[in-house]
Image (cartoon, rainbow, N blue to C red):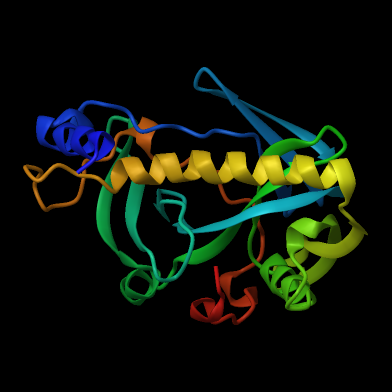
Length: 265
């Protein structure tokens, strides 16, 4: 056992994990507003969020692909933590308002997404993409949901086996759709120019940074002490992912039929 392994062992036995906060990786969030047909950027600082419109198209480079599941009603929200693959075990959270109007978040279940969807069929996937947003080359988290997922998967499948999404600029646009509730907007994807030279070096550095920060957060939760109870952890609002309210007017039946277990992410 080397010194670092011994330190990690002692950290687990000390119970320190129960009082330390997990490393946080918070970047601006970007998503398409389904009613307005514009992309919105939300920045977070000191517990306060600020959202602005940034136009009907964006472009940049996809750095890392993640995902989460959620469902929303007027009175409550269910959502999972961010994760990589259908193989991962995840935690399902519930957020609701108590009788005195206070928002409360609690963990309600855990398992693979297949197991959770069997028990909570209203859960829907959101693809989360760490994205190097041009022209400022800033890392943001791009959320893709609903009808836009079908176009996203088609876009990924357009790459040959020896090509990678981070080798090209991706242009993300808006397309108009018709559903049972009327007109709404979904995302579209187009391959742009190849990323080469200095630009590729910057992309590589960004991938390393994102991967390192995400792994640090995941490792924190992957090392419970042996003395911990085997039950679900208690959720604190500071420890759960930020989930925006639904604004998409589509009924659930308009979601594309996608076998998420076949997606290699």
